[in-house]
Length: 126
Image (tube, rainbow, N blue to C red; front, side):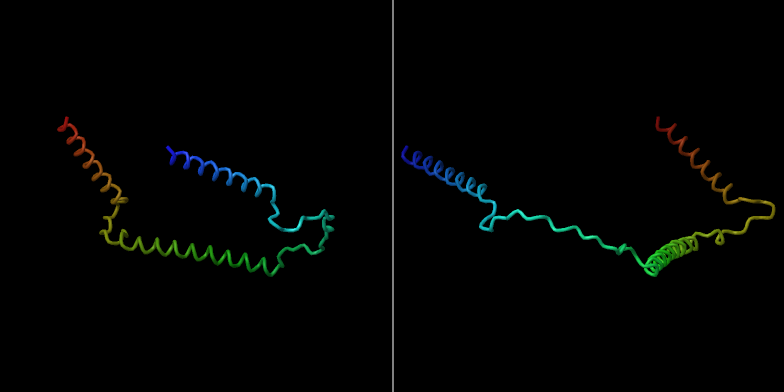
């Protein structure tokens, strides 16, 4: 019983001590710094310089942008050409004379055959 009273008393005293230190901290926001005195705001100064870029700086920025866009275009086109080399139509035999779009016709025929087989499989699985 005594231990409980002692514990409760210590707890209450510690909370009171914390509460007073928090209140004291809120009353002294300067933390030892001298109190600011009211002074007039500094006068507004106007500058005559526009602060913009010089024409040669603008030219350099636009030139750098053009070079950057050109480099990006070069990389994209180079990658596209590299990818088409491996899958180009040159590896297929040339179409016979008078027949155009043979590769489209063959792809369409293969797709139809594949779709027909898929439909037949679905019918079997019912």
